[in-house]
Amino acid sequence: MLISGFLTANGQTPSQTRPDISNKTLLTKPGPSLQGRAEATALHKLADDYYDWRNAQFPVRSSDAGLHTWDDRLTDYSAEKIAARAEYTRALLAKVNAMQTANWPKDERIDWMLFRAQLEGAAFDDRIWHSTSRDPQTYVSECSNGIFSLLKKEYDTPRNRALAATKRLQAMPALLAQGEKNLQKPVRLFAQLAIASARAIDPLLNDSLMTLATGLAPNEKEALITARDEALAALHGFADRLEKQLPSMVAFAPMGEKNYNDYLHHILLLPLDAAQVEMIGRVELAQYRTYEAWLPDPSLADPDPRRSKNIPPDQASFLKAYESREAEMIQFLKDRRLITLPDYLGKFEIRQLPEAFKPTSPGGFMNPPGVYDKDSTGFYFIPTYSPDSKNFYIRAAIEDPRPILGHEGIPGHFLQLSIANHLTDEIRRQHDNNVFIEGWALYGEEMLMREGLYPLDSASQGQVLRLARYRSARIGVDVNLHTGKWTFEQAVKYFMEAGGLDHEAAEGEAAGAASNPTQKISYIVGKWQIMDLLGRYRDEQGKNFRLGQFHDDLIKNGSLPLSVIKWIMLDDPADVEEALK
Image (cartoon, rainbow, N blue to C red; front, top):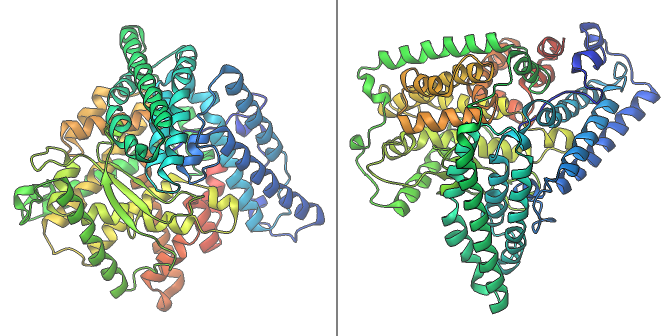
């Protein structure tokens, strides 16, 4: 999830400059004036120009999204460029804020809200989070993702991708030097994570990258190897110098409750504040701990490979077994008409997680088709396999991979994001509200369980309950870390005691929460919003209600805030109004 935020060009908070969005403004439905239609058209032109600008400014992000125009570049993190990007965003946000939208059609007002939230998100880092001056992961991630985004798909010939990688490798020492100059107030926790990632990047560059070198001419291969070695030396040196500075760094710097609430309201468009979000976490945590206790054997919620009839002997067998379960899940969905799978849906594959990403992604991560991707394939990257692993995710996948597959693949992220990529409205296609994205995937886990995919009182059912339990624990960690109420050590302890995670997984989860504010609340809060919407939808449909139709109607809107989707599906803007009042 990209870290983003919301101060305007004159330094005021959004509430001081934002146009009135009172109940009257939203509920009134006047006919669109000529001026209103012209401004709505102008909005989309501004958005298209912004996306083009952003794609060029952040070339690694573009590569990752399937746009390969700038594959030979890294982001310019010079002080001048950082300032210019911040000013561009502030000026554009001020222009969008100045638009008078009362006479716009409902769909155009929604697009205006979404685009403004995107811009406020982009401004947050410069005004509040300050990743370029506080977080060394900014620069290490640029290096690792710069190469990983060229490797994960065969979008071009190996030679062309290797030549692009050479250019990026050559740029890494200068980028890391920019980073050291920018890091005036580094945070110790972030530095420790960056050090771990920098020292784990060798296999990505020495092994994975070199698979592209077979078709290179001798001089091209020599240039690649030289650039790789110099990049590795720069990364290791960056890590070594950070390590020496650790004692002088602040341990962690929370954003504070006010900034956290503003993020919830004006970027995520959530009708909840930090205290309400935390209460949802407490209620859900109590519920799922009780569900675990009601199992005939509560230990069924703690994955145990010894209960599995077939323990894969090696990584290749493990990956194959993982993928084989997806077919039966798809058939289950089709037989019960639980969701419609579009014809354009591509393949979903399981691959090994590069070591460089392990410090903040202990359970692996989903890499869906990018918004610009011509290739419809998606991947789920899982941790290195070991039948004796203590890692929760590995143990769970050995016993039964279906709960995690349902979350990451179909009907979860892969399906939902593939559909989102096919929207024709560019503002909505570009929107990536993580509360909806993760809420849908978690909702799918429990929906499949309740629809009968797993035997009653089974280890598979127990795994779903444990996954929901620790996602509930994530809320307390995220809210309390970023509002300044907990230390990192308290967060790890809470994950272990309340969430039921092992120390390795708990530490990685806490690190991810610290690095990505609000990401960890997305699962439970999004699921809670979807379930609220489902109940309202069911009441409205009456005898015509069908669960599969609800799912289709829900995810056809893309990755929008659920407050907006509620307005679209039920013509009820109350949640949007609450978020923006």
